[in-house]
Length: 307
Image (cartoon, rainbow, N blue to C red; front, side, top):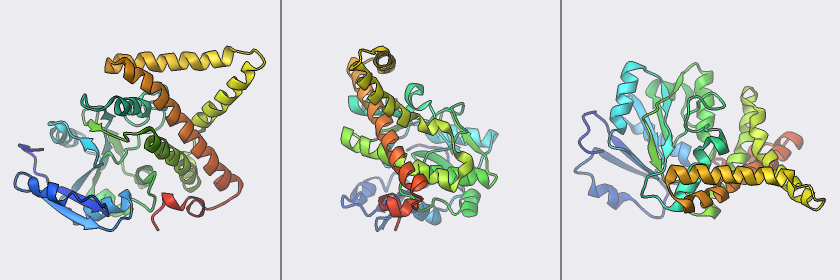
């Protein structure tokens, strides 16, 4: 971020963390226009609103704490907005060469067309592009009109993107505004994250029925298909499990080629299955309670919302 020709400020919001970053911020205070704020934990969306309320500029760029920025990141965004202004933008996330094999495999599972349809980092993905808050820009006007992020701890960025589009604001994908996203670094935390994503989607579908798509069912159907395929082996029907094995091979070859690492290719098979099964089971559980039992999302999954 040093030696940038563009005027900017950096706001760090400490969301109740027990491992303070205050001293780290002090180390860079003389080099960067840094502003540090501490607040009690209330989730990522509320903390981003907290930062935007205190920002001096008219355009806010929102980043997760686990991303690394390329040196030309701000320059690329500035050039895009100068030529094609939009009140909200998003960019892709990628794996930095320094990331571990597990982090690279998780990145593949979350970004590949083979696993998510490229929905998180491609303007030509399977649904209208909705910026994610790990790499997102929003104008002050759009923030003030919508009130910023809502009360969700998970899916808060999708909620905001939907409300922005409903309010008439355009969203755009900036191809060269990529960040390096570390994501989770253990299988357990990754599975928990994608499971929560799956639980959050039926809540969004309930609030915004116009956003519903049968494609959201694919991870659940994937999991059900695995169970059926394994069961059919008992009856000597192998065609369906063979199709799954071919899919695993495609993941292995694609990931190994992208990262030039066979270990990442192997890990990507596990990461893809955790991503699809975790999301699928979370989606099924939330669908059962929200759609069939007519329960309120906040009552069933209070951990996904701000109190």
